[in-house]
Length: 102
Image 1 (cartoon, rainbow, N blue to C red):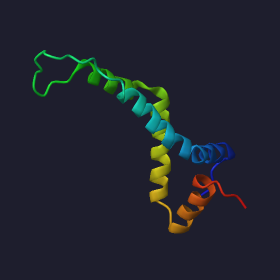
Image 2 (cartoon, helix red, strand yellow):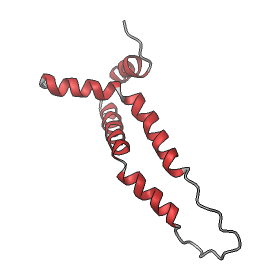
Image 3 (cartoon, rainbow, N blue to C red):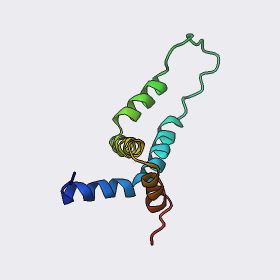
Image 4 (cartoon, helix red, strand yellow):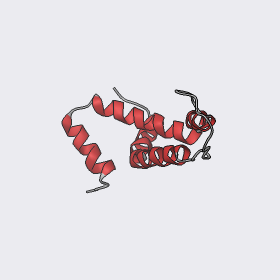
């Protein structure tokens, strides 16, 4: 099965961005989740309630376009790696993850 050159180039770029996407996902999630809620000492807390800051964080995680793009590309590469043999996985690791070129 052959694919056209445009799709091939898009796939290669997606593979090249794999490490960047992994780091980007971690950084964006940590930035959004690390926003601390103000300390409310002495006020009663409702059991099992969701605070506004937690809800805001969840909404930001779902609406962040850069995060969603990185997650999509990461998932595509991960799913493709599950469908290929060990030799192809080794080539991917050497070529794109370790950045070793011959």
